Amino acid sequence: MIKLDNVSKRYKKGSYFSKKYIDALKGASLFIEKGEHVGIVGESGAGKSTLCRILSLLELPSSGSIKIDGEYITKRNIKSKRGRVGIVFQDPATSINPLYKVIDAIKEATNDLERIFHICSLVSLKEELLHKYPSQLSGGELQRAAIVRALCMEKADYIVFDEFTSALDISTQVKIVSNLVEINRQRKYGFVFVSHDIRLVNFLSDRIYVIYKGEIVEELVGLKDAKHPYTKSLINGETTKRNDSGSGCSFYEFCPYAKEICRNKKPELLRKGNYAVRCFLYYD
Ligand code: SF4
Image (cartoon, rainbow, N blue to C red):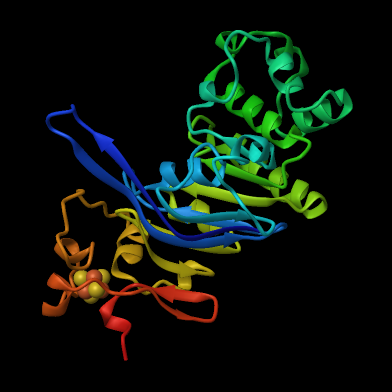
């Protein structure tokens, strides 16, 4: 299991004389078990990319903890544990070294050619493309090569897909998505699907975390359970601007149900079984 406990991430911005801090994640707690498909959904700027980088062990949190299969990830061991989690980035050019032929980049993950060719067939990547350089592939082909590389990592039990269908046309998306589900029936990876597209995430996932301005505002099994006003706005295709929300609820400015208490007080995440929501409307 990957387990994040009360994880926050703060970045410094600006020059020495005008230092600013950006709180990209604020107290996020979540878990992903092997064999499970977990969705993380939110608008651009919500903190999803930061969450991806922490889940895939590219960065440590500023506070809070991350554990993989019961072991804390620290400065000392983060590099040696990196192979436990594969990542397919939104920009596939980031996943494949441009100086290597595609096959050589994938061979960094495994030398098992039979496995490489099998996974290529599952994601419709022609074998002849493996002998080209990344710059000779289209965005969609490169995205599929990045998926092959992640699925070939021999020690990986978890794979994070960050907006992974963005470079693919609809028919390829459908094919790859159903093949990924099929692969996981046998292999039992923990898959994490990260996207702004709540319907795609709902289709792919057993459980969903909704993130807004760096906070998890709702955890749910399917969209039919959605209660938080922000989750409902995502389902309706509405977007919000990222303003500073002050000391109250992060969604206060856009919420059609906002009450006086929401302006100055932050709601806690209330949990009932495998459902959780951060909203005063659901306080008893
Ligand atoms: S806490 Fe208040 S402002 Fe925030 S989502 Fe709930 S009702 Fe809306």
